Length: 88
Image (cartoon, rainbow, N blue to C red):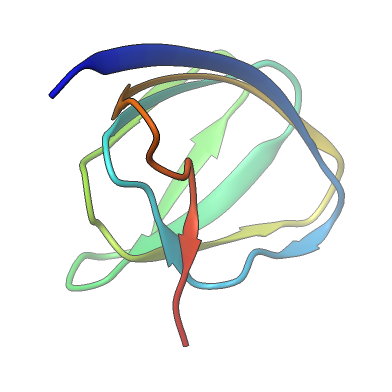
């Protein structure tokens, strides 16, 4: 299958994301702000401005931000796949 690189800038308001996963590798760089992310089966991790993070394909997660946050995302996806899938 063909792959594509998707680059986006996410401007997140304070609050909690819904539980979700991404079908491909996701690399994020936090510009301003911070977040607490919990990936199923792992300890919660805090990311702050200036840090990069990786999310593997299919890792179910939820994030909490207490202040506005901007993240630069680079994702490697199979062409035609949705960037995000929400789960209960």
